Structures are given as C-alpha cells and as structure tokens.
Length: 501
Ligand SMILES: Cc1cc2nc3c(=O)[nH]c(=O)nc-3n(C[C@H](O)[C@H](O)[C@H](O)COP(=O)(O)OP(=O)(O)OC[C@H]3O[C@@H](n4cnc5c(N)ncnc54)[C@H](O)[C@@H]3O)c2cc1C
Image (cartoon, rainbow, N blue to C red; front, side):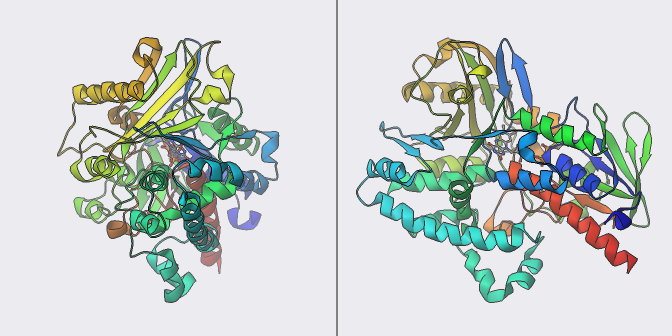
C-alpha cells in the first residue's frame, strides 16, 4: 500500500469525525495528510463547552457500534482501549408518556420483558417478532452497504442482485414496517423514534431504517469516559502520532482545479496548499456552493439529498438532581404523527414535540458540581428554510413550551433550578459547522427522494475529490461518519491502483 500512497499529499477540509477518520486511515496507509479545520478545535459537532463548573457535550451523546472505532485504531496498528474508554449505559433509554407510563429499553432480555409487560400482555412478543425482522435488515445492510462501501442504488443492485435487494423492504416506510409486527401504540412510538439517529421521519424514511433498533441492541449503547469529547481527543492524539498535520482556526475558501482535477485549496487567510487528493468533510451541498462554486443546475440535481432535521439544543446546569431520569430519556408527544408532520412536512415548530433529554451525570458525576446536574434537551425541529423563516422569538417560545412540558411530566420547577444555560438554534449550528441549512445529521433518509441513500463519496466533478461525513453514504451519526472516513480511504486506494494499472 505504501507504494500507491507514495508521498502523495492529501488535504482534508474539516476535522469532524469524518475528517479525522479519513486522516487517520490515510496516514496509516502512508499518505501525507494535512487536516484543516475552521474552528478552534477538532471534533466538529462532537464539541464541548465548560461553563460555571458544568461540562456540556454540545453535540452527540449516544454512541453505538464501538467496533467501527476499534477498526480505525486497529488500522493504525493501535488498540482503541489504550486511548479512550467506552462505558456501557444501562438502561439504554427511559421512555416517558403523558399518561404517566414509564418504560425502559434494556439490553437485558429479562428486564426488557418486565418493562414491556407494563404496556400489555402481548407487547414483549410483538417486540421479539419485530426484532427478528430488524435483525435481518441489519445483517443484510452490514454485509454490503457498510462493509463494501456501497455508494448508490446501482452499486446496491450489482452487489445484492434484484431479488436480494428486495429484502431491504424498500416499498414501505419505517412506520409501516413497525406496524406489521406491533399493535401497541406506545411501542410503535418508541420504535419509530429510533429514527432520531438520522434526524428523519418514520413516515417518510424507508422501512430499512428499522435496522436501527437491531444495531443498538446488538452493539450496545455507550458513554465515553470523561465526556463524549474524549473521543475527539483520542482521535486527535492518534492522528498526530501518525504524522497528520492539523491546522485549526483555518478556513478553506475554495478548491482550485484544472481539467477536472483538484490542484490545491485556497485558504481564507490567502495561503494556498497544494494537494494530490482532496477530501471534504464539509457537507456536499455547502461545499458545492462555496468551495466549488457549482452552477445552480448542478446544485439542483442534488435536491434529493435534502438536509436532515435540525434542533433547538438546550444545555442546562441545574442546582438539583432529578432521580427519576436515566442517562438517556425520551418524553413523547401526545401525537407523534403531528410532531413529525410539523417538522418534515409543514416546516413548523411542533406544538407538542417529542423531546430527547440527556442527563449524563447519571453515568458521570464529574460533569457537574456536587448536588447539581447537566440536563441537555434536544427537540427536533425543521432545518433552516429561506422560504419559511422562523424567528428567534418563535424558537425561544418553543424553548418555553418544552420546559413546561417537562415540568408537567415530572421535572418539577425545572425552570427555577437553571443556574446556567447554553442555548443553540439552527442558526448557531449552521454558523459553527457550515452544515446544510443547519442540519444535524446530514441528509434526510427519505424513501421517495433517495431510498435512504446519501450523496456519493466520489465527486462527479473532480476525479481526485472525495467526501466524508453525514451528507454522504453511509450517512449521519458518529459511527457512520467514522466509517465513511475509512471507506473513502479504501476508495482512494482502489482508484490509485486502477490508475496505475
Ligand atoms: C446536538 C446534536 C446531537 C447529536 N446527537 C447524536 C447522537 O446522540 N449520536 C450520534 O451518533 N450522532 C449525533 N449527532 C450527529 C453527529 O454529531 C454527526 O453526525 C457527526 O458528528 C457529524 O460528523 P461529520 O464528520 O459528518 O461533520 P461535522 O462534525 O459537522 O464536521 C465538519 C467539520 O468541517 C469543518 N468545516 C466545514 N467547512 C469548512 C471549511 N470550509 N474549512 C475548514 N473547516 C470546515 C466544520 O467546522 C466541522 O468541524 C448529533 C449532532 C448534534 C449537533
């Protein structure tokens, strides 16, 4: 492999998990790698802020598929456990319903049965039948889409053949797939909300997305010891050991190219860095608009890769402890369909959203001063839409609605206990990471628009430009973007070998 890599210089734009993973994979193969990040630290959306004794993980909080991270370290000849520790979180989630029902998701089959028995006699049986179906979807997907880096519908058909491709249940929505096995309305809400991993709607996403519960139960749900940002620090350490040069506070303004070949990147500070290969961790559509100055018609062709939802992100430091919370909690809307319709069809802020709430001190008391805890709240909301702008006042009114709902559902006097807060709207998310319209997870999984596929990893404009991260296959979320960096490295090696022969 060293021969193909030679002393080729790869410039990677953006040091999110996708960019870091690509940098580590490519440096492990002998490439010279320059990693360029506009913010003051690596990690991208995996970000952290310390405020008045509280530590706020500003981005992701649920980690699954640790094997994907292990593989990245193994590729570099290292052991992940020497760099960062993952701790199993139990229960996985706690689910709160407006009628007072509280049900946990647990990896322990016996506990899981007891929990679902609270919902009704047959509910655990429905769950088991659903999980057999979900596991099949997951097994099929892992064999090709994940492991072989399948990058579009034609590659899928080529790898699996027509008959086997139908196993992906592409003609149904995720919700229809759930309802084939489950009648209980609360279990339907729980299973449908696994779509939160990719910021889409179960009423529009393909039924294939029902692989998500199988993945969570198969690989577990993890916390990163010391806080989620410790994962970014571990990857940064590894990248530096492998000789990657990291430039922070450095923004790429343009990719310079000639005859469909990227030649260099032009920085905002006026400097130019030459490149044999360019990898963009900036999302595809924003990169087309700003780095490549693509035409309107080129951008229009990408319309099917609609941005995923965004969120209002509230990080609260509170001067009390809520013992009823687990580490991860969901507070459901009274009408889940109305919630998803608001976000994905009407482009409105839900009147009664489903709320994801993280209380990391349940696993790690060091995240807050003694007697206090961190409460992170994330309702999903529409991404930014210039045709339907939402004002700061409307976002703030939703913040109030959410806090009132949580107080009603048991977090007594929550607003009075807030001693510090970090509050982000989609405008902040877009400005910080240059994500497409403030999207959190990259591209929406939508059956009719894209069958759940994201944009391809190879640029169709420049032969030596590749993309990693949530806007390309296999998609958003920490494990998938980390996998994308490894898969892009494989594609670069394949392409170089092809050109040599
Ligand atoms: C609030 C929130 C909660 C989430 N919860 C979860 C969760 O629980 N579990 C989960 O798995 N995922 C979660 N996610 C999603 C997950 O964080 C992302 O899918 C993933 O981290 C994205 O990684 P990425 O590499 O695609 O992009 P990013 O992390 O967005 O990285 C892209 C990087 O490129 C940089 N960049 C962009 N343009 C330029 C330029 N021109 N020049 C230089 N640098 C540039 C940006 O500054 C950024 O650092 C959450 C995200 C958010 C925001």
